[in-house]
Image 1 (cartoon, rainbow, N blue to C red):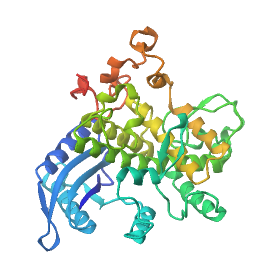
Image 2 (cartoon, rainbow, N blue to C red; image 1 turned 90 degrees about the vertical axis):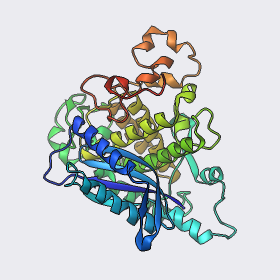
Image 3 (cartoon, helix red, strand yellow; image 1 turned 60 degrees about the vertical axis):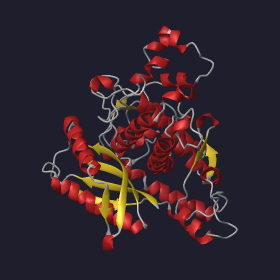
Length: 412
């Protein structure tokens, strides 16, 4: 059976964060180390075949996805964890890094449903597309439907059970502190103790949020309640995990079919929601770069290092992330007007503009001839610069960055 094992490694607590050049070096060392591994001998001599490895490095460590064939989930986790520790140990520059976890990340409720219903009348469909359709519900901006994974405590996902919905709300709100790059002001919440000293100041003035991150302008509209802001922040954290898991699936689907999004016959979770006019350019390499960009962006959201969006691809990642947060909350009956407004405030603060929306306008077939749009990076030719930093102060992950920084474009 095939498994995707997620290995998370981190620097020692007293180590300085990696700068951009060090991240490039660490990524190269990890890729070289894992590429040298074709097979692993698991417990009791069981063979585990390594199929593929995807590496993403951030300032405090790395996330590695290892695709393996193994007889059991436990064997896959143990074998990959052992080889990850060995890869670090063999590299002098990474020897002090620590493997925090090596696990196949499952969504427990869906797994339990499959096990309980195995071979029974309620067994999930064997067809992948049918299973995905079964768990698809809700829609985000633009009316696009999105899948949402079940949370602990969910019954049928309808949101009709008040007690179950309240429990789910508590779970999602508990995730909010992980979004440490953004204070409550990003969601329009000015009614918190941390902002008490600012309450006498004029609205519209720019202030630094308590969590670090970019400067934020407090909206002039009425403040969002703390509970709604918390729920919106927690939904973004939860949506980050779902988005990245499903982008991994999309990468694997394109790799298996050796095709691009426009010609892919299998169903895709998110890549099909990118501007459709460029579907032929969304091949496996593009998908990998987009996935790494999503990992890098959501890492900066949750480690306190986010300042501003680095490139057009990150703007598109954030669009998908917001859609996933909307659909997750809507699925469980938690997307009230105040929560939707809080997510809207967040989008307004993080996006500098929404020029990228022109990419989705099918009526603008002449965008390549419009000089007003050329500078916004939204012409068909500009897909080769989607991963180019907006300016020299912006961050784009070294694996994804466009050719001027050493990465070959997928649209040559």
